[in-house]
Image (cartoon, rainbow, N blue to C red; front, side):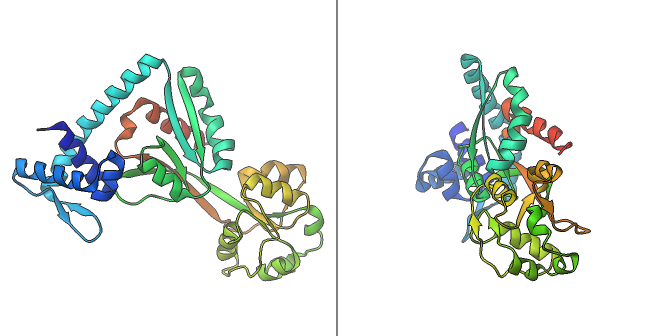
Length: 297
C-alpha cells in the first residue's frame, strides 16, 4: 500500500474535509479526492461518506486510521529527529496571545533552551488565527482561549485566568459600594480602557457579574493588555484585566480592585497541538513543561 496514499488518508481523517486536507498537504482538492478514491479501490471499501460540509469516516475508515496513524506519526518523528541531529538544535514554533505568552509561557519554557530547544514565537490576539496557523503547520503548539473543534487539533486545558475590575485609586475614591452594585452606573461615571472597540473584557465581566451588557464606548483603546494596565494606572479610567497581569500593580497600590464578586469571571486557556504530534519530542516536552508550570499559576 502506497504510504503517500495513507498519509493523505490520515490527513483527511483528521481534518474532516478534503479541502482542508489539501491545504495542509499542499495539494489541490482534486488530487486529494483522486488519492482517496485510489485507496478505496485498492481496499474495495469506502473510507468516507461525502456530506455537504466535509466528510465522515466509515467504520473501516476509522479502523484504518487507528492502525495507520501511529506508524505514520512515528515516521514523521524519525524524520524530524534526523533533521534535529544535523543541526544540533530542535526548534519549537509557539503561537499565543502576546501578554500571556510573554509573561507566562515563555518564561516557563526558557529552561528548555539550555537543553537544546530553540523557541520561535508568533503573537495572535485572535485565537482563531492561531488555530488556523497551527492547522496549516505554521506552528507546533498554540495557546488559545478557544477550544478547537474536529479531529485535526487536540486541546488540553492549561489554566484558568481570573478577571478583575480595576481603576486608579483616585477614581475608586469617588465611588461607594452602593454605586458599584450597578455596573451601568459605574460606566456612566468612569471612562473605559479596553483592547478593542467591542469591549470584549468589560462585556464578559458585565455579563458574568451584573448579568447585563455595558452601554458605553471605550475612551482609550490599546490592543495590548499591558498598555491597558499602564493607561488605567495613569488614571485613564476603569478596565478589566487578568489578575496575573495586574497583581503587581494591585500590591503596589497603583490600581485598586473595584469589586470582589463571590464568583469572579474566569477564562480558560488551552494548549493545542495537531493530533498526533505529541509523539514529537520538542512538542511533547514543551507541552508537559507548560502543564507543570501552570499548576503554580
